[in-house]
Image (cartoon, rainbow, N blue to C red; front, side, top):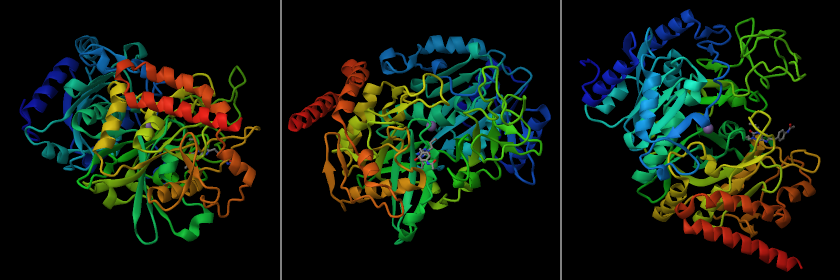
Length: 602
Ligand code: TSX
Ligand code: MN
């Protein structure tokens, strides 16, 4: 195959082989240019794949609907394909590579007939940074090309950086016939390859994101001595210009994007903090020459959930999505704008819902349940540069930013206090392994059920999680100075189900304590689970929080904690000999600390 854009023989051979398998009518190499974008948008509008939104009110914005059975990541169809099943571990679906390739080959065979195969060269991270990884995605979806163009650095510059011999992740995607029974999301870490077929939903098809930047990257990180984590990164700048950075892992539906775009609350305005949004989903972290942990956001945009996003919950997101944004699975209004639950209190009098049906406010289905205008997992795709708290210097920095603190969170109505600090890095790994979240109404399954999701990585770790915990412990040993590790819970409730903490911008009060602890500026109270703030250490200026509420927020009840230990022990036990001894000991040590508390009470 001859090509004027690249002389990378392996890349050219691979594109040729995949085209022979998928038999597209033509192959188009994407250059990332503005004219290419316009051309693809118009073509997709012509076929109905995209709807052009009201260009006066929403310049550069487009609308897309997925198939109704293709609205979220399909974890049961997602596989880690390593030669040994043990390397995928007990928490991943596993298939032997040869079997997986063979199964998928049947699905890819001729799947692009009558279609165009787009070749998308992309970089996760700034082109040329030691952090960065290059991928090439082949797809028959213009929606994928236009989304990848927002979510990654994409185009000719990437091919130039790749040169004639550079390494890249081979990403193959076809919508095929969008049949859920003919859908597979396959990862081949040993071949640096991803095959995704039968889906058009973002998390399954924007292969740079969850598939490459988390599953494949976590595997590469384990081999190469760095970390790929499901974390937001934010910078907190003080009036003296000093910025400190925090990375945070939260399971879905905990408001990670909201936290990444935090707006300081009125009561703290006088302190003059400025927040920089570095990333809202993924952090790649390496140990710097100074022995500290440094991080980048490998992405170039946001793929965020829309329902619940409005001026009150996330004003910066609302600014970010004013233009050049792709809206997926929300409601389409007659004036060519879009609406979703939580956008504002003015739903359109009539609209077309995410399924393509006529919709009116107050509509009920046959079971009497409200008909939603937007799917609960409807999304925006928007360039990170449009976020008011975006900082181009940080974003393009090839060194990344130094991480002062890592926070783990979850949605818990009880048990977990507003914030606590682990005793040390090793204990922080143990605390991260306990991360769990309650299902919300928006998720499939029983509401309120608590599911363990260590480091919020359960669906995204591309290898055995027992080895993953070991990798965390080893990274800690290699650092000269480790970030302090915290756990937070914005979602604690009182007996009447009322949230005890105002959350949102007021979370800065917690971040402030976290940084004070990291800087050794404030003492804390030791408890059996870690350190909590002294009664007057949190700045609650302007909050009107009553002392009883504050007490409840930090209550640590052995009668509530101790019955949760068994589920954690069972979860960790499934890793067998892969579970690091340190975590076994930390389980025992915690038990002993609680026993001691009980003894002192009597
Ligand atoms: O994102 C959230 N955060 C983090 C923000 C920086 N949410 C939304 C979760 C769904 C994605 C929150 N919801 C947070 C939070 O800190 N806290 C809560 C719970 C809550 C909801 C409403 C109120 C208080 C707490 N208050 C009123 O409604 C007035
Ligand atoms: Mn995520």
